[in-house]
Length: 242
Image (cartoon, rainbow, N blue to C red):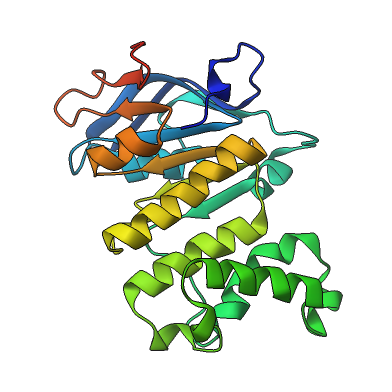
């Protein structure tokens, strides 16, 4: 686990105040106050239907909160559009391009860095090398020419993570990014995301079901309660409950 979140000077990347979301007449969470920080792996847990996915969607700006506010504090951010560019989203539907190679899918993570004219003639060679290195890191080096439709769900999940890493955002939002992976591959992916936090001072917010994975990789954890939307709890894995 990274230790930088213990510093009072740690940069806050995102702050939610009094956040609440109501769907289909039911509150998923209410009066939620949280901060996502640079250099921190922040896990989100809770039973099915507690609102974990909906929370990440709200943080990402894909859902409007029913109450409360979210503010972004990314470096060199000029406006809301720039804030969204600093989010690396890994959601359960993955949103890969089906009739494209795994390498192309990873390269798409870097589109925000280039004009459409430049990418029309192909991605720069240095980016192709970097994207291939990510695939190889996740055990997909020999499959880089395969189309998405030719691969398994677990392989696609690793590609989605690699694409987010290639984007190099300030904050990763990952919704069960290892749900379809075996234990070895899951540890590989989570260790890589934890490294982004501890070494590159990125923020990582990750929905996880496996409590051992939470214990192994997270600095803090948010526990949501399906029965009581106000009974959420954020605790440090160093023992300081908030």
